[in-house]
Image (cartoon, rainbow, N blue to C red):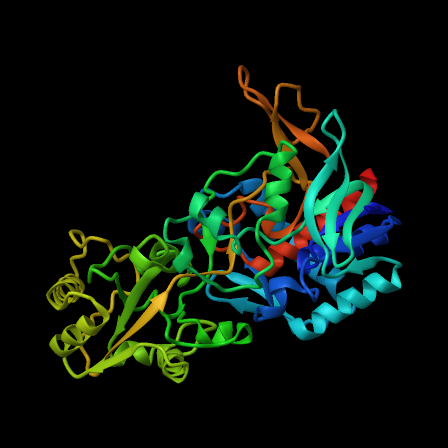
Length: 462
């Protein structure tokens, strides 16, 4: 027998986006129920470093995170300061504003404090959070309007009848089938660098209801992790990350360079490209000088490499490049190819003429010449998918339709099918696509701003 409950706003997902959406809706006077698939709330935010940041300058954002939805990116940049003030008013303890790399700014929270604070605020406002309750499908009328959620919990089937539904299930990085469909044929080799509950439930349910997907469904954010046989827990994702890939020379399992390691705003871009290589694996090669280089917000590579050893990862040291290349043969990498790749890179960098170097090297043009040399086997890791559902600036989910759009911020070109909303359906966090692409604009800031916006809009429409 299917049980039934009612609320003005039903939210699928109890991560940062869903919790912020719940509070924002409750503050507007709506009744709210949050359905969280996992045994705890907080989602991947619980596993993060807690820095809620985004770009400080839109011109820099346009340069470093191209191909994204510019209107949504601008919303994030413009709304973050006030959203952080609002977050602090909910009882979340925030540090003073700090810079991030050379292009961002934000404030740091402690995820272990933030999640309980947000849950306490929801409870104080009369909201409900149901853990162990997973989205199965959306309930919608013949005219396409969404009127609730069909879910399952320990007791069986549950229907939540609602005037507005917000999808905040966290992306589809936990679903190997969807990753293979949209992201990479090597999906089975990607390491999941987030909670395992984000399996595309929101995306699949919305597509069934007629929702449109964003371009660049293959894009994702993450950092390379030390590869197996290394062993570490989800609470050690940060320390197992090898974030110096933008300084290193990256070789695939054929011993070849395959992308500009220094592209993008950090190590995220090379991590993305590793995902398309055989085994979603690569080797980061550094010399003694690189090992001691510090970068903004990151310690020298030496610290990450030492942790890779401690976790039992594949780490190789050598006193010469020839010795290093020969050692790579134990990992199945052709020594002659690897040595030729490193020498070609060194020759171009040392001559100052990288015009003919392929792949190119746009930044961090440091030669690998100072012994001892070190190689670390890494795997591409996915924290969240960047492709997802299309939405307008009020977080209304959009679909392809022949009807004329009534939304002022959507313009349909003449002669093309116009964009219309899916009535009653909203989106927040990583279920919303097109904000970040291969470049990274800040995940917690994305969750905060879009969650707050979706909660307010959904409550007003309920």
